[in-house]
Image (cartoon, rainbow, N blue to C red):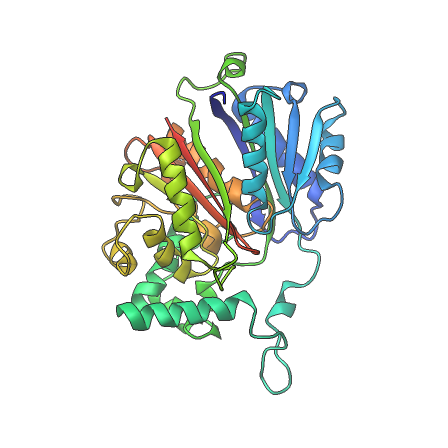
Length: 375
């Protein structure tokens, strides 16, 4: 397998944009990535497009707007992990020698009113069954709090951190900091999770370009170009009952990624992780080996995962505050890592060199993807 580097990234701000179509959003992200990498559209050999809501051939429609060049186009759907899966396919195609320069693209639009998932009937009961993710995560949060003595303040502090980081991110859906009091007083969705514990329904686009080390020499790139040190995808074994929210799946996937990259959790200087709900961040701290089991709340309480902390987590704002448009989500994490490793993250820049970073994403159906990057 050849060495593969990250060459550039581009984002279209996350949010809800009724006047924007997905093709224009995708084109905006692609052009940003091309400019960031110092190359042109004809330099791209292949595109992998991650999307969930857009149906057939979304990537083809976007690439057609960029211009026909005969490149290879593949559309990828893997729930919340669609963008991360597109990135993995792009990485593998370069590592295997099939292509030299490949673009991973993620894009999604809201195609139905998101509030329908939280509507209530005349009796005040949710009109969807209790299998909705919010109820599962609320149960997880309550169990975790009861088992480990975690307080509501500690759980809500994840959202405080997330919103503060997003307030520094021009690509984030939410760009305003919030307080613990605001989080506690927000509308209750499923106890103990108020709406400010939950990611929004939104849309956007993200693109990340990868290439071989040899191809990178052709472009106007930085001398320090992050290398993809590990790319691991695993699914939940059949013997596990909870295929959707398994921390064990994250632990196994991360362990294999650490082995491939030749590092451990103690070497990480930045983590971008799946945090559709606040409880996930605490649980995944532990699953990724950042802290012993049951001590996730201590990391947030001691500010260790803040931008200036020992191991910053979700400097982008994460799913809770940057947003979770599905197709682009994992690629937005990877773009954040690229810019942090280059020292180009602006007001949210980690105040020391970032030489080893990890991107984590899970998807419905029991899939987990972990990427590790080295400078």
